[in-house]
Image 1 (cartoon, rainbow, N blue to C red):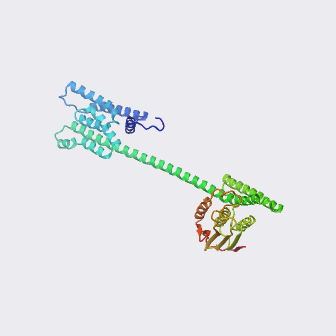
Image 2: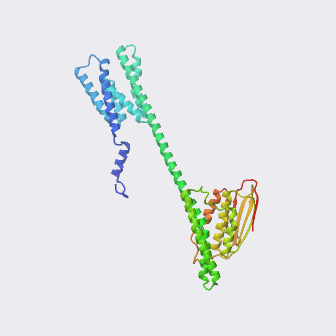
Image 3: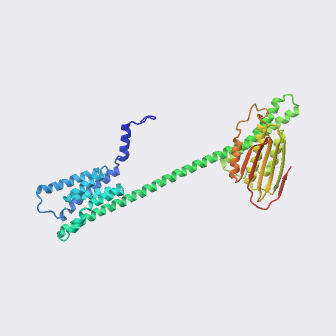
Length: 410
């Protein structure tokens, strides 16, 4: 069928028929042939032990044998019309011995492939003569009574075996479906893990590089818009640009190294709360006005300190991008048991862009989204947005109660 082409009504009907009656496999053919031979052998082997009425003519006996042969051949259609074939064979088995074997195979097929209600109806039809037989048991010849009891017992055994096989098939199907669902769930979990890993990579790349590149953009813009600056200032700006580009490359190399070798590499330390003063100094060297105060009782856990560092880094980067030249007030306070609170506040500068950038730096808004997720993963919460003419970023991070020392900053 061509892609994008809908099947017509006839094609849909063929597909429905194929789903209801799937093509017979080699295993199914082997099973059908085996059951046909078993039914024929049963009729032949038991023929000597079954009493036959003396008033039967030679033609009637030949008809009984031919009917048995046709019934064995008809078993090849037991998968397509099991109920109809079973009813016909059960009715015929009341008068012909050679139909008993095919009838048992047909009853087994219904019990193993059809619903409980259909099986119950077929079982009822098979055992309808039983009460009449029991009522006439005293006047029935011993050989005929034994033959009838054996017939009903074998019909019951065929039904029981079919029910057992159907229960086993249903168990196998349920186990297969459960295995498929488990495989789908595992694939879904792997996909979610890959998505989280990609998000972590994107967040780490943004946090590491945005700060460095924004510093580089500020100094490059200063050189562009101040061509008459003193040579000492030009050399200083060029040195800062060189150092920022070099540090950005180093940060990028570290991130790529972590992605290649895994996060548990002690040779590449992650930033902590103690690195925040250095971060503030870099922003001041770029010309930003940053007021920084820290009142922290002890050294916070590594994850908490790293998240606090990223909060300050993103706040300073956003201030340079969206409100250049405005003062930024950064404060860090907290201690064991009380948690760690990081806040950054700067006046709003509507419509302002980074100096010398020629427009807003790409990626606006993505950093705060990633920072909010990072804070949530650390067990804290992040609040950001304009409040009374100021843009405020506040992160509250957990810090378990434990003894520590006092750390303060300028």
